[in-house]
Length: 70
Image (cartoon, rainbow, N blue to C red; front, side, top):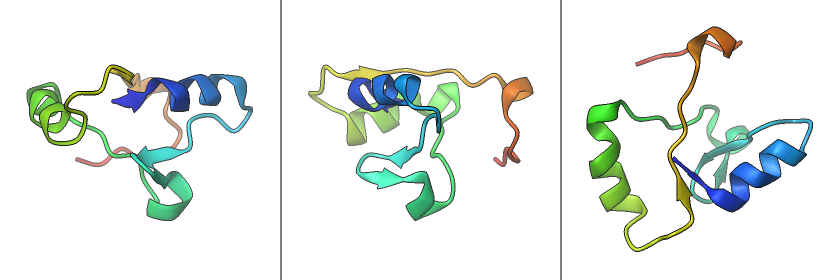
């Protein structure tokens, strides 16, 4: 999940998406927080409840150059 403003900024920026989670950058944390489909509702309820500016993103692992860990 991403905030719409963060995602819009990433699309306009050559560095890409650099947000780890709300208020924290990839540089701060070292990874991007992701969820499996079965976790999305719980994460949305816990961290994004009441927001109307949230986007659900899907990652194509074939396009990721960094390690993906579960």
